[in-house]
Length: 220
Ligand code: ZN
Image 1 (tube, rainbow, N blue to C red):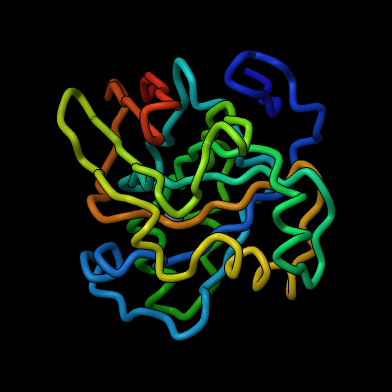
Image 2 (cartoon, protein in one colour):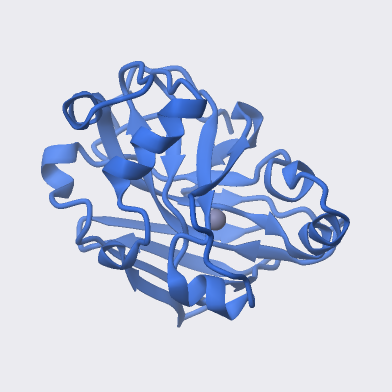
């Protein structure tokens, strides 16, 4: 299914689908579960636009590259260009708040890390970023008090809150914009809380952001 940015009422966001700028290890409990040190500056990576697919109803997980892990993350839709952005510019540019899955080929990533190679194959493959529809920012409310929850086959697997982010949303976006101009239609993924694990074809997922955004979907 072709992905287009839209709001939860089904209204199109009228923005192209761009790149997805992501941050690794933005929650201390997640860094600890993978035995990773906490970075001293935000650790950034990018998924290309070809990674983005709709989250709702179903999404495909590859079966040829070892285990695929889910990472449930608050997603920020960018509506205006941001370069060396100030707080006010970021506030004006946020066009939506949603949730994304940062799907990760965990064994591939492990090998790349060992060799000191970039992570693109593990993080940026086709379909590696299922995205929800977005809430209007005014509806979403405080970005640093969002409950992020993933239930897989009826079991709660991830249950975090954006208050625990190491790099908060505004400073994170400002930092990203020093390196990568954010364009209308780009999305920022803000890191995953603890509880990541494998997702397999047939798994039924419920992805929630607070009590305002609920996406029921299935891995195929
Ligand atoms: Zn992630």
